[in-house]
Length: 568
Image (cartoon, rainbow, N blue to C red; front, side):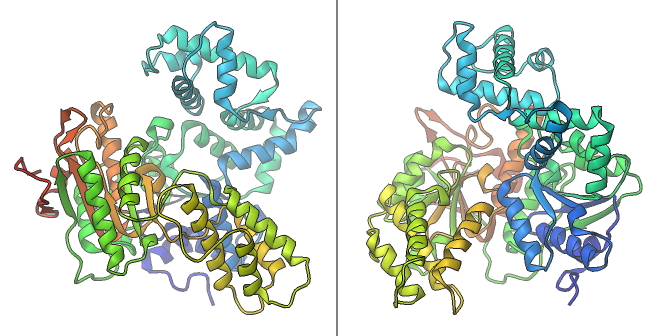
């Protein structure tokens, strides 16, 4: 069986080109991770690649873990699938002692806390929110490869701080960090790049170790990450980048889509493959996504892989208030679950974290259990850690119950019962987590043992391979990127919410449009959008993005909460 089996024509074309430079322009739902892993597997299968000489770079540890898992299933072991930071940190840890005669500096574990200590020397006491904003500005400055003076000269505003004060705070932070011989997250990339530039023998060793590079989500690379990638490559061109300009949603953090958009200009001999066959979404959902991005730089025209005869156009509902909107979404979600849909197949997405409280409250009132992305990680939950420890303990104690009865017995001893507590709150969250562990045990193959099962749980924790909870997912649009659900509800599609009020100018609005596109393309079967006419004491217009998509693609609902008012 070949690694190219099961790929469509375009995917196969992309996976077949084993020498770079290669750019795979992969729209949402077109199978980009499949192409990445099958391309690497094909290279190993044909002898073109040695696994240990391949580096696959991702943006999150979870994505790196998924990549390693998929490669293992294809029979490929030994590929370095890492984030930029993990790869840079590994190289620093290896080479620094030789170059400096001492271990590499420690990594700052809490930037905001260190920043608070630094500003004390300036006799200032900004609040925590301001400190977080300053920390974000420090991160943006470094990944953009700007000096402190260059950064503050760009006119970006942090609270009410004058540029000169912001510069003083940044310098105080760097001074304190240097005195303590520490590096922050961004310094890791800077130090690694500096080491490769200054030490030819280090660069030669890295070039010898890694011969073939693949970079996922290339639209999100920052100038610093791109520079580090250039140094890893040296004068070679064995590079495959995969990305979608329409999903660039981290420009505020330094991401620059120009590296993807200008890839052909930089590498005139590049092979470019466009993946536009979408395997996720129904035609009406893709019609809305295509309409929103039509004419935008780098936009792809997505087409459904199969017909969906019963698929309906996305529904738009206007409500009087945000509370009405949350209650309306909760009713729609509860009704869908009552009709037999699984809660795990439903997501409610929104622009900003501040929108989640009213939605959580409304869903809990409707008896709908939820999980919020970006909260505590599954394997960090005390109920999960306690359960794994108890299972490992039970694995060394003799018993005659068998695997699954023992797992159930362990969970009962920890207070787990089959009947769930009421939706909403930590008690239900803990119950859902333990129920997910029980489902993993129930789905285990014959012959499973407690020792192997608990080892597998620890491996999943390391790779951040979290089990699926039987809950409705709540998430910001940013956190939802890369995920999908059969049924998606997009809340807050009003001016001031999406696009958000502080988005000013063409570039900022374009970023909001891409964020809206990401939200739309999370939906597989059904998509519902909503907005409220009032927010606080002010009135709100429907989002301009609804008008750009158009009433020919969207259908309107008229709930009882509406008493007149304009259509979008």
